[in-house]
Length: 61
Image (cartoon, rainbow, N blue to C red):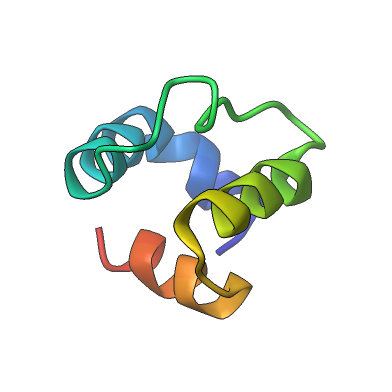
């Protein structure tokens, strides 16, 4: 998953992630340019998933 993929349809993916994982908030899924790693780190902690698992989950949306 690269930055272009995330930016291109992030609002759609964000909605799907919130449906799948009710514990996620808009703040958890706030994507800012250059802060992708920080956002993914927060998601890893909150969901208890590895980086690879997160990439798979987001890629499958």
